[in-house]
Every structure is written in structure tokens, then in C-alpha cells.
Length: 316
Image (cartoon, rainbow, N blue to C red):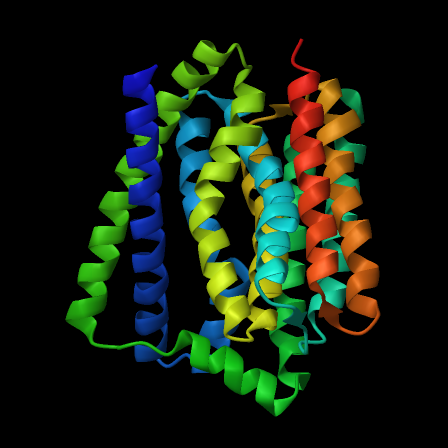
């Protein structure tokens, strides 16, 4: 148990280092081949922080730990909306100026409901996974087209987020380091997580929902708090919503498209509705004064802690 915990923590550290390195490398290389800083920043804001979770889930899927991957994908969404956003708003109220985020939040609710509908028969079929992947392509096209209508100040802030050194050698080194760190980080987490679960008496699904989802999100929580204190509310919320959409449409959709995925009945009745509930709580916060206050951040955090308590209470 102690050894498994050590390997798990070391894996989380490598994921954090690899995730940061690959984001910088992707931004630098994209701008070097002609992408505008705004487009590069937009994609990094929306999906950049999802890469560590993607690598972990890919590793889990390859070694046959499908429940662990499924738990991590959906658990990460609840962690994003409850813990990350709640902690960031407690650190400093989040002013949201990017108009694109409200329709993306609606898309997140639709994607979550679609996954519930697909899972009513206990399995996500390959064609249903294909539908989720198609949804991601359509959503990505919408983001790239709609984002051009954002205010100039918002576009400048997004472009500034992506600015990094574009030297070819530096970014190739960043990319190679990220590949090694993400590979071994994911490998050690997927190896250690079942041992942790066995020691605690938890199922692989619950291990993915709680320690893996929370652990892989901790660097994002720290980054979100720092961004909130700098007044970058759009970046915080863009990370949260974009990462959550990526988890459902690409991670879950991709796994199901490759191989039909069993979906436990309890998952359809509890975890997925919980993810939808967080979206429904967040939406009126955005439609009101376009600010997520400290009080509202506290509500999200308390709801997240209540969800954890419920999951633990249902173990028996």
C-alpha cells in the first residue's frame, strides 16, 4: 500500500510536468508553422489541460482497465466543475467576458445527457462512440468560427496566454520530455491505482472517480487559483468547460468507438446525473452578472464535497 501510494504520487508529478511541457511545446510549434497566437491560445485554453487525463485513460484502456478510465473521465468533469472552479472562485471572483462559454456549457449538458441516454441499455456501442466523436468535431468547428466574434480585449487575452518561445530545438526538447513524462506518469498511475483501490476496498470505477480524477486535477486547481488571482476568469472557465467536453466527447467517445464500453447502472443513475447537476447549477451563475462570486464558488465546493461524501457512503 505504501509503495503503491509512492508510485501513484510520482506518477502524478510526472503528469503535471509533462502536461505543462506539452502545452508549451504545442503552442510554440503551432505558432512556428503559421498558426495565430489567438487560435493556438483558444485551443490550449479549451483542451490543453485535458492531455494528462487523456494519456492516463488511454493507458488504462490499453491494459483493459476500462472502468478505471471511465471513472476518471467522468470524475474529472465533476472535479473540474466542483473543486477547480470552486477553489478558483474562492481565491478571487471570476469575471467572465468570453460569450462563447455559455453555449459551450449548454453543449456540455447535452453531451452528458446523451451519454446517459446511450448508457440506459448498459453499454455504449461503437456507433454511439462515433456520434460523440462527431459531436466533438462539430463543437470544435463552432468554437473556431464563433470565437472570432469575441471582443478584441478577449482575443488579446487568449493570444497572450499562448505566447511562448517558438524556437524549433527548444520545443522539440519540450515535446520529447513531455512524451516520456506522460508515458511513465500514466503507466505508474494505472499500475498503482488498482493496488490503492484493493487496499481501500474500492472498485476500479470508484478509484477512477476519486483518487485518480482528483489527483490528476490538482495541477489544474493550482493553475486555476493563480489565474483567478490574475483576473483571468475566462481562462479558468474555458479550461473547465473545454476539458469536460473533451473528456466526454473524445475520451469516452473514442474508447467506445474502438470497443463497446459497459456502463454500470449505478453510473447512469448517480455519477452522470451529478455531472449534469453541476452544469445546471453553474449555468445561472454565468447568465446573471457574468461573475462567479466567492459565495457561488463556495456553493460549488460544498456540492463537490457532498458528492464525495455520498460516494463514500455508498461503498458498503
